[in-house]
Length: 68
Image (cartoon, rainbow, N blue to C red; front, side):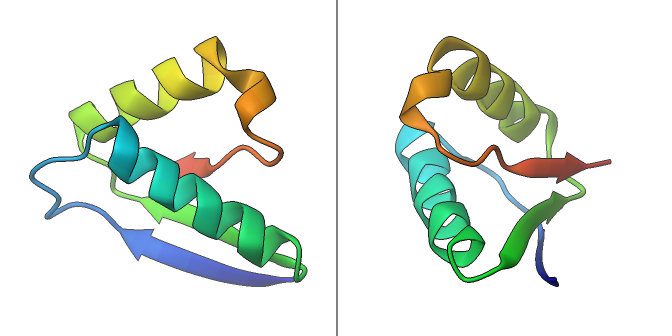
């Protein structure tokens, strides 16, 4: 399995629309046998990921993996 790692440590802002874009990319690469991993997420990005993936689990077919 190929892993695509996004280093998010320099990310200054990400709202629900930005996270949705990451989710769409994740679904696309998952369909091709790969995995999207977000490394070094900011506190805000972790919060958005938690909220979206817990509140709207049906909206996502493949959860995004977050690494510290």
